[in-house]
Length: 237
Image 1 (cartoon, helix red, strand yellow):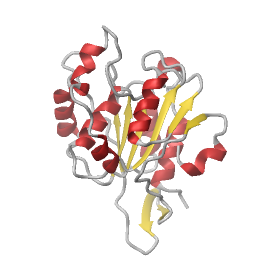
Image 2 (cartoon, helix red, strand yellow; image 1 turned 45 degrees about the vertical axis):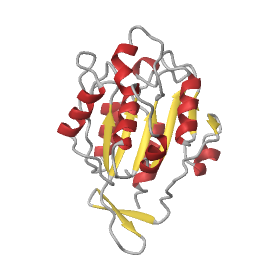
Image 3 (tube, one colour; image 1 turned 180 degrees about the vertical axis):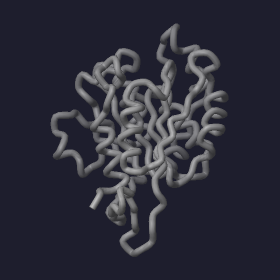
Image 4 (tube, one colour; image 1 turned 90 degrees about the horizontal axis):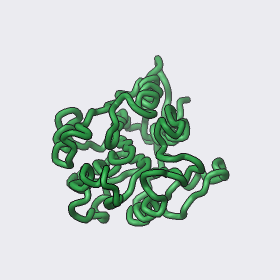
């Protein structure tokens, strides 16, 4: 959640962490021509069209949870969306996921908006850590830092946490950042999300009853997430 959104979402608990390199969108305006969003710097220079990338987590797929719904919402704005597929559970590792991202998406660029769920957040952090490029925005859903103490999941995720994150580098590359977590997540304790938010210096939006913010928790769609992405892309005039 951005600072300006607090008054509109008082029903959700918010922790007071802010990204140190928060980027406001007030220097940009947008208009719509023939169904196409065009973002233009107020001084007249056109902004590159954003490229949202939706990244699923362990046991996930591009067809799961709110990913197809969000992709459809963004494509309706005539925005190109990528939803890469990662090997899971078989073949899941940081190296294999990094290679899959490179093969299906390419390298990070400053027009990308990274949207990750669960272990997808961990991949985003590793990609940003190795990149010299600051992305336009990062939307981190149900993310954490470290092993979970789970015999089922830790073998699948241990390569992502084999070394400590370089949070100073990551903070510089995140772009405008939002972070969300359910207060009753059955897989990732809320305290682990708070810890990650603190390390990233990002404000954490805690969603009451949100669970793991997946389809099983009722999130076949995620309007709040779309609204926040939409604010970053720009308001249609």
